Image (cartoon, rainbow, N blue to C red; front, side, top):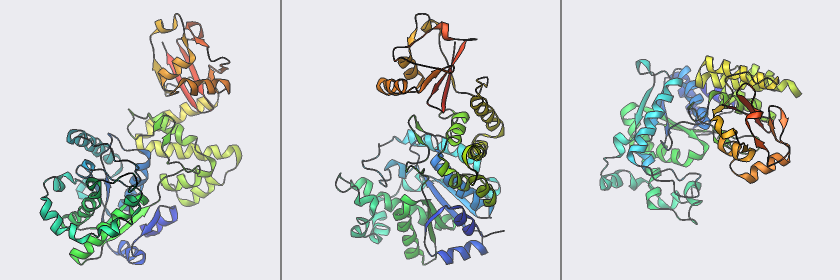
Length: 407
């Protein structure tokens, strides 16, 4: 079996790593316990987190032991990395609820049987720390001057950085030390925006324990346009089906930019790299087949084969001009609403297809809205019972967003 370091490198995950050759050799000769931390700021993981899941799955398949760290304690503060303002402070109850939701999602991707992976919550060791003891043992090893050179803090100095947030790096570094001492954890992984936090923990463990540990970051999931993958006009792409349906996840991936196909196939699927290169080399209309493979593979991993099959069928029926599939997003509405008619802009806002009337007007004026394949010509177009066939209509926004209304 290939060294997992080489696999991650070839597929384009690795951004920065400490002691590259040393780490590669370690991963070759022994099973390594490693961790990734997830602050519980929402009640679902996102498509951006799925990249981290893929890294953990690659590592576990190669015989290494994932530690999924739930940030029940660190979320009480909030990581300032990449933030222009202080993160909203959540209650303990909200954080605990979010962490429980994360637990269920982790189980879809990692094998926790026979201790092959473990899940821990840093609230268990951070919440009851004694401040003076903590600062004497941990704080003494951190230089404020050096910390202020890190981007996660430097970028916040003009807007204002609280001591509350300044302590985040110390707490995350202590996580590494705790996991080393209690679970023989030798490695911390995270997104490239976590490099300074990871270095803090890596240096702390090496100083206090006189042992070799390692840090690695992977590239953040961004599109060719430079935006974070999984961020859309309608909001974030979630791994919870109640927040983002399997069909919506499928369609998002089915419609990625041609330039992103090779990267996303390599990062978000387990397809062999020869197949990734073959698919991404397809040209013109044939590239859509590669996008379909990408969408199917990810949807299957996140939601299962049955939902992936339904989403594939729905997608194909729409591209073929048919609207028969039950998997297309739909909203049931009271027929009385349509007796006197409802304006197209009001209807689209109700369905979440637009955020403002000005957005809707622009779409209509540009010919970007259709009802059952018929272009909406006027912004004051009323939608009434006469528009419904067999109790439903299909609204299309742009070329790719479909929504059924049923009465």
